[in-house]
Each structure stands twice: as structure tokens, then as C-alpha cells.
Image (cartoon, rainbow, N blue to C red):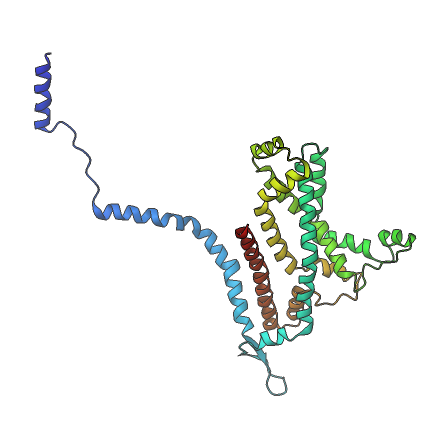
Length: 327
């Protein structure tokens, strides 16, 4: 077939419409509906989480706020059942003027100022030791350091209560042999005893978090630093610690929140330390109000504690961000 005949046949196909025409754009409403569907699709995936979050977190907070604005009112001789009346901010005034409750908040904050830095510093040192190249028995030590976190808090509290009890404590007996008579359940030692229990139980957990962050540090960065003569603790201080700064900030915030919610360890300690007050921590003070059927006061103390946690955690975050921006 000659080239001229091929060209003639192609022109005839174009005239008869055999050549496929380019696709036309979709109609306006159909295209708009498809775009809207894609826009709402992420919300459908987030709906289960949003529902659970609203039911288990937002709703209880709102209900606690509502309960804190009311109080029980008894009229006459008190024989009739009490009625709920709007109290405004009087519950908050009563809670903030309650010396035992405010003292519990101050006590927990002071414990945290000492315990949290010590615990995270120890966790950081252990993580750096495990990340070093020449550390022997890494797997054994990693499991050994993490094991206290795997022990339930109540079980750990009972174990430490036995170690603290003056009559049977082997630690107190060993110190007495060298002339040191220490009562771990005395008023002055109780904050240190509880802080030691927290450090023992949570150092391993924070160590694992920091150690995981250390594993994410690029090997090329550490190798370049070693080639420049930066080794040992200089490598850790100038390279590794700055690289795991986000993990340190996260563990610090979690430790602040956990410290403010201190409850299990002091409650278990009461078995061997009768001098430990029933409102030694803010959570214990709120629990006392629940036991007395004063739910409005308990809600008020819970809201105040939540505000304290918010102020401490976000205040720390703001301080860290300012320091990071200044550097």
C-alpha cells in the first residue's frame, strides 16, 4: 500500500469519526460531589477516636466542672434529704483555704522538683551506657533496668513498705550497724521514701524511651564526630544528648503529670506509716471527699489539680521552647 493511500484512509477515518475524541471533563455537580466526599473522608476515619475521646475525656471533665459549681444544702433540722444549690465559686474558695489540701499540692510539687530530675538524669545515664559500643551484657542490663516497671505499682509498694518498716527493715538494720539510725517512715523521711519508690519504678521506663531515641541518631553523625576526636562523654554531651532532646522533654512532661497524680505509693505506705495523713496528696484529699459523699468538693479538688497539672506541664513546655529559641 502506497503512502498516499494510507494518508487518504486516515483522513477518511477522521471525517467519519473513527478517531477517538479526547475525554471531556466531568459535569460540575458530579465533580463537586466527588471532591466533597474526599474532603469528608478523613473525618470518617477520625470519628471512632473522636467519639471515645469525647465520651471518656471531655464529658467527665465537663461533668466535674458542673459538679464543682454546686453544693448540698440542708434545711431545718437536717431530717429532710439535702438539695443541690448553685454555689458559684464558693467550693473553690473552700478548697483553696483548706490548709491540708494546699499543703498536699505543695508537698507533691516539692517532691517532683527533686525526684523528676534525679530519675530522668539516671535514666539518661543508663540509656547512654546501653548505647555505648563497649558495654557488656547489654540485653541483660536492658531487661534488668526495665524489670521494676513491669512489677505492678501496688506490689512494688508492698515490697518497699517491708524494706522501710523499722522493725523488719534489713536496710535500717544494716545502717544501724554502722551507727546510722534511720526511720524511713518518719515525717521527715516520708517524701524521700516515696520519691525513692517512684524512681525505682519508673527509671527503667524512661530509660527505654530515651534509649529508643538514641537508636534513631544517624550513625554518620556519630562517626563524623569520632573522626574529629569527639569520643566518650564528650560525644554524649555534644551530640547524643542534644539529639534526644525531644524524648527528654516528653518524658519530663509525663513525669510531671504522673507526679501530680501520686496515689498508690502513699496509700500502700500507710500500712507501715500511720503518721502519713489521709490527705497527703491531692488525689488522696479528693478521695476522702468521695468517701464522705461530698462529691461536689471532690470534683472541685479534681478540677484544681487538673489546672495545676496544666500549669506545670505547659509552663515547662513554654520554658523549654524559649530556651530552644534562644539557642
